[in-house]
Image 1: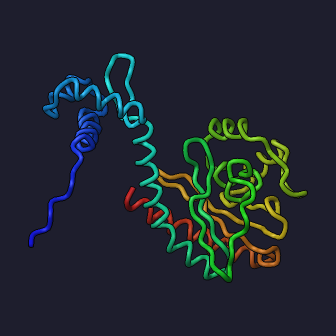
Image 2: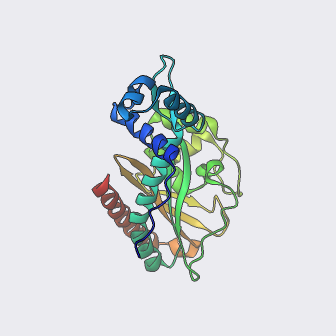
Length: 251
């Protein structure tokens, strides 16, 4: 007995084909051009375009032409980020197992800094992120590392929009002190119990043509005492370079 054919919704197919047709015309097209390309009636084309525009998958410009919209770009960005995280995870797992500490990956996306992956275990649990990265970048090694990697204008814009809240008695809340620390970081950033007491983090940048972020190890203060800190920095820097290479291969 042959398998039954799948049930296809023609209007959905046509809508998806419209987005593809806009992209095929160098990302900008008019309704009549799209109707002709897809052999659709003009009324049907307008109905579909209105729906796609309302949902943000297309945008209508002042001259009446259509371009790919923000919703579609968000989906594409999330898909790329998922691929980036998948390639970074094995390296992060190795770093976690080497130092018996949770490992974090953060990224600068659309002007904000966010944690995109955490690799921990029952023996190396992650800390409770009681304050989101959007309000605590200044108090974390991850955030400082990314801020130090931004162009001056981007960093200025970020700091102008994000107050330096005090999260512990060690949190740096002075703008000049934070910027001085970032300038002196030499590519590796630290936080000394600034986000949570009893936790110190070290972060190294992860930067490719399409990704700006950082990877960090969270440790107890005794784990980063003396020579141990340099050993962690060496392992972390090696891991950040491996993640960069794995991402860049498919960028």
